[in-house]
Image (cartoon, rainbow, N blue to C red; front, top):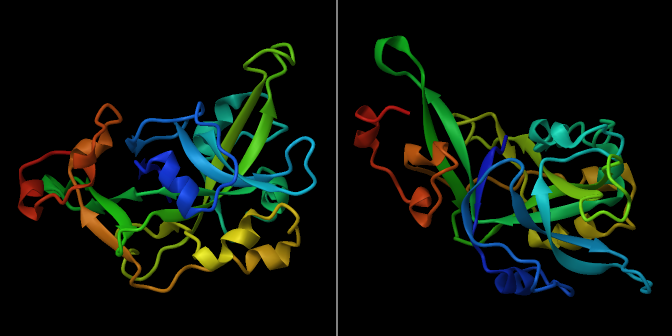
Length: 250
């Protein structure tokens, strides 16, 4: 699963790395090393703008936690931060977005907690930061959706909410001892197909949801401070000495 991630890349860098054609500099975000559900984050997507005939690759700011079109309220977002790759094509909450509203969530890496034995048999949580071994950004497979708040007029600034979820898969062998699930990140060669809203065949899309080969990710033990969303800084990604877990409760 993926319940927290770090996203500190400058939007200009994301634009260059992912070949973005359209980005409004007024729509920006500060670096965030502890992104939590319902926070906003940059995503890369392709849509056909008004007056255009072809999809344009865009950088947008969306809220994490997908709200289906049919949802009566936006409160479902907290429960829908992840979508399983094996059922995303058939679940009512995700299948329409999977068919034509796919995106990439560029992140530095994500945090995962391993359950470990503690004192007096009480289990504790040990956090890790999982990132690419080569230091490049992770391109997480995501879905996005539009939700209309019918409690306000259609021309109200808050009438529309655009949200996203992160697709997950079985963890690779080296990460499975930490958690059995992991976010699915895409190889650059598949970015174009994944983002293409014209590609709607479920079988073709499922073939893109292939976990990368082992060895591309690095799991680093980090400070338990990441457990609180009040903490936010690059130090959260820094290695945490194993010995310090013996004296720190988290």
